[in-house]
Length: 352
Figure 1 (cartoon, rainbow, N blue to C red):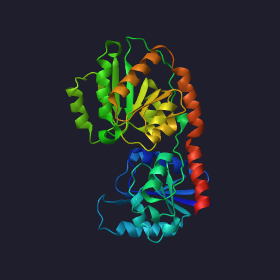
Figure 2: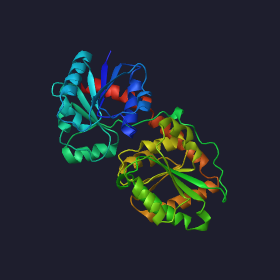
Figure 3: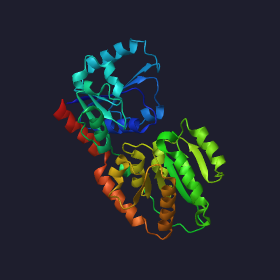
Figure 4: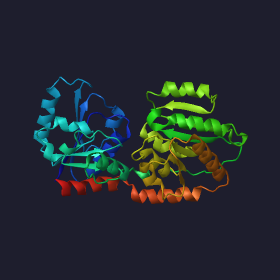
């Protein structure tokens, strides 16, 4: 039986950490799987999502403490005891901790613009999308095979009621860390101001689910744009909550300035929502053949505003439900987490 170790610095609410758990849980049906977390940054609710068949070790290094070597001794002892077939790393810098294990170390590149200094030290590098693979190849010449991300479609509660009249509030949702220079929440606020300025769309709100360093900036921007009452910051929510409630919204918008893939986009599709996303290569790979999904040029506030108004019109005309259901079916075939986990197992067998 294969012995797989998934290694990361932290286990918090980011997309890559959630994906790590999903992959490990699926792979535990076919292999012996262990998760090792280096730093003392992990959330109990995420630990509780890990399958009982998956072993978990937390080394509890103080984040940023580069002088302590005790965690290294513990890490190396663990790996010597486990004798893994593969060490699947989820951060590019982890290879520095594995001087005696590099022939077993592989990496998933979870985003665009990943630092390239250590990539050639890995036995193999994988990309989450064609966009990430192209980025890595152009910048350092490494061919990084694509293993697309996936989600548990059956766990996401699907939207049932698509009916909206002109007097009911249209509820837009954006899910992700509040880092506007990457995720583009400020662009959505500017677009919302243009949307609600038209009386036909004044009953429109946006909820930003998540927390992050841009929250104060975005809240101040709400006041500057006179959007009080149209914008809400409910904070961070568990993935279980998101999967249960996403279908209660009317539209998901992901206005990122940079996006290598977009798990949130998949979650919106799984919930049966129409989706608007910026036309980066990562989201485009997912959405280009999905009839209930729309792209706008990155950073173009006017285009985003027009897309929102146009989609609200289609929703009011009962013209999106069948398209969203088709999108959900297509995405479910292409982006199942089970397929993702099995594809990694196939690559391990070929590459190590």
